[in-house]
Image (cartoon, rainbow, N blue to C red; front, top):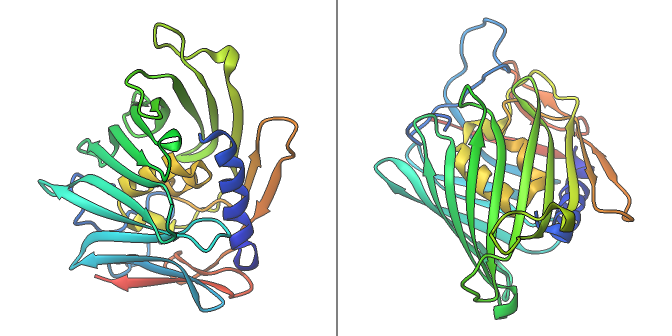
Length: 290
């Protein structure tokens, strides 16, 4: 995964932008192994992902106030821009996440989110502020889960653009699963009808496929699911991060005629089935023990 890390993120970001389309009731959390597990062995000490490095250069970094998640810094594709998402809590739940870029003129994303008792986001609003009013927007999101209430089935975004007071654009993301893992996110972007319904005849589709999951623990499952849900609304190529396991391939198919891009991802694990590096040991995952 190491030498492909920047390419992986770039591919998703570039194509995602073409359409621009924890795990508990409290975010004072411990990691959830789900199907990753330890094969019945003694559980590992509670840990959280602290940083990801590539050739000893920090690509992502997460900070905490004690055991409480505080903020995350993520590199935005192959650009020199880093987004820092800062969480604000109300009653021990994340209520706001604000993503600010490191480059002047970056779009700022200010999310308000509502979590249920399982840590799942069930509604959200985003105010995106760009350097020009034409590129600014306000989005409202509706989340639909399956009958179990565990698996995210669909997200419908309705967007007001350029300071307009009426919704005009939609992004509908529909999810397919393999077990508990998101196998596919189909993101359709188009315009709304005069009654505010998605006009699918206008939609352009980008498909994000997360393939060949392992059975190990996702490092991102040690952090609040709502944080990566919000980030995925900006960068949908990262929806796999709300899955319990790790994909070994990410395939992005943008609207025709652009070609699809497949990016392999590899992992080496510690004795507790947590990824610690890619197979080349150029990309490394660093954890903090709680």
